[in-house]
Amino acid sequence: MCGIVGYIGKRDVAPLLLEGLQRLEYRGYDSAGVVINSPKASGLKMVKAKGRVRDLEARVPKRFTGTTGIAHTRWATHGAPSDENAHPHLNAENNVAVVHNGIIDNASELRAKLVADGVEFLSETDTEVLVHLVARSQADSLEEKVREALRHVEGTYGIAVMHADFSDRIVVARNGSPVVLGIGEKEMFVASDIAALVSHTRQVVTLEDGEMATLKADDFRTYTTEGSRTTATPTTVEWEAESYDMGGHDTYMHKEISEQADAVDRVLRGRIDDRFSTVHLGGLNLDAREARGIRRVKILGCGTSYHAGMIGAQLIEELARIPADAEPASEFRYRNPVVDPDTLYVAVSQSGETYDVLAAVQELKRKGARVLGVVNVVGSAIAREADGGMYVHAGPEVCVVSTKCFTNTVVAFALLALHLGRIRDLSVSDGKRLIAGLRKLPGQIAEILEGEDEIKKLAEEYAGAQSMMFIGRVRGYPVALEASLKLKEISYIHAEAYPASELKHGPLALIEPALPTVAIVPDDDLLEKNRAALEEIKARSGRILAVAHREQEKADHTIVVPKNETELDPILMGIPLQLLAYHTALAMGRDIDKPRNLAKSVTVE
Image (tube, rainbow, N blue to C red; front, side, top):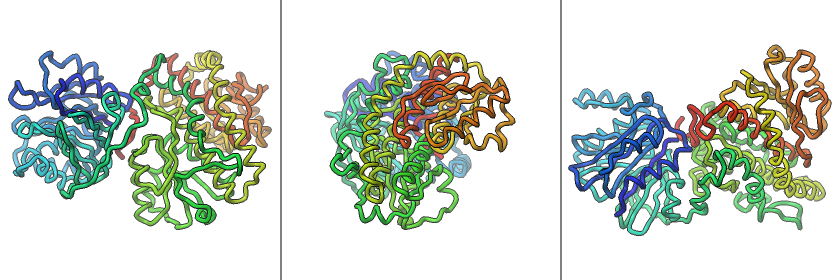
């Protein structure tokens, strides 16, 4: 979740590093810092600051020049946000600097041993133990010093290390936290995210867990933490630098909401097979015989990805008639689950690096399970670990909260459900019906977005609420969960989501005029049941905002969305609620792209 940027070459490094940090601001952070190897000074020079990258930039002196450096944006885990706890961490006596993403689980034990040996710590962070371990190593090369230090470390890390005595190189290593090398012309880059690289190079190498690399201006080499050479072939990043710009919007979230019609078109493109009323999903690496042998589908994700997985599970059960359910990956990996050889496991992650999901995938693979990945980032860890899967092709998503990737992920699950259904018992006519519905989605999303002004007015009316409830039945319940999450993430209004059928079993006690309810009311076989829930709320003087396919008499306000096929309606009903959350937060003056306490890619436990 933190950000790493590094450079070695011939250009002035400080502006490059600061630009890279700005590209990574969307990941969430509370402090930033930069260290460079300056030929005009003896050793390494460092500047750090609590706050934003602009606060760091204001502290950088004019004569802060050099051609090699590493930089970091930190999201606090060990120690509060402060100048002292910001990265990089520097052992001034030995001129060793380290930036680190992840968590060192045995940091307390290592710190105690180092303190007993007379080492003085300047921060509360777990990372600082790495600096001292590298500095105290008696090895002859920086690579061996880092390798020796890592032998003592338990936990996750993505690190970049500089040493004044080895000024011609940067050494990096990965275990559970992303590290990407950027290959330039007589210059090399390193980052935790390709967003920091694409304005300079589109040739990248993604390190595997347990892998290290040495970067020099004109070369790089990769090897394991045990010292064995590995083969690294650069790949070309498909996203352009412009994909990370706001494109005339006031926030990245608004830009990404507005991109959803095009994004859904991308996830559908080239995958529909009209001849057989199905879809092509070659990346699954799952033939028809194997697909027919699946007895259960288990979908694992966290946060928004978990909600997308809940909708996906319902689609798979409805269309393929395979028992399916979704579970938070963070819970699954700790409950010693029974791993069934006839179960297909699907790991969902926008970044493809979410640590809890990745750890669940690794545990499943260790137990012989078949795992598919549904991710947005090509070449990400989950994509590489899985047996097969689907890319959702949403394009770069910069805002911390996910919108277009959620929508594309649900569409990808609709494709998977249709594919499995047509292999099994779903009829040709149903296949044609669903394909027609999928093709209508981009146009219908565009239609919903055209009603933004009306949703903005509603948001301003509801922005004064201290708390809100979201309800839905069956297909509508995951939509309610996701809408509730979006509102609390960026507006900080307390929000809860419940199945509408559960109102009478407790939550109805909360209903009063001061607590608005957002109700998901699709035109399906549960319409009258949902209307009965609205009656219950209205009888207790509750205010109601309905999201429905037609005006709802019992609602104070209704957002009308276009009707699609019943199975696909949840995809559309989530779109206006993204806008509702956005404009509510805007009315409250929130920092929408950088909500407090949150980070984009959660690569720690």
